[in-house]
Image (cartoon, rainbow, N blue to C red; front, top):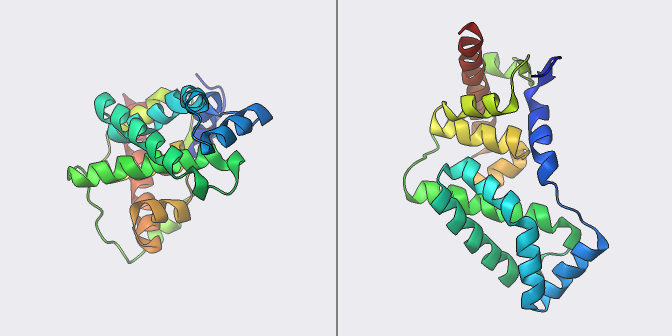
Length: 202
């Protein structure tokens, strides 16, 4: 249990620190060898990143089999398109974006999620604090509460708070308009606040 108040914006850092992958010279060298289609290097990079990428996919899809498939497809895409990556040290973030994009596309394909157009930003929600104050709640309890929200809300809060994507990145991944993205996330945060308040009262 935490002994002090923490903002939810910091939770993705607390959760992802253990998944942060080194951009050491050795790792960059491996990725360079992957560009030359060296299978041993590809396997080494896969082992280095697969667990973290699986966790990303699973948090979005909530299905282990689908998450495994997405991870496999994402690595294939990454290795096949590695020549497009200009900065090798950005490989982890680039791969993560591929995983997230494929996961969301799968949700859309299976019609498990649909983005509603909310072009008019509600001032009342925009005026609320950007950070959600949480006291004495375990990280896993936060994630579990997010899962209870509407699929659209849960997905966007996962991308924003847990995976650490900013509004521009979420817009690029989901195809939403910028104002729609901000409005939906604001509503999602308000819904999360209410659910957390109910949890604290129990």
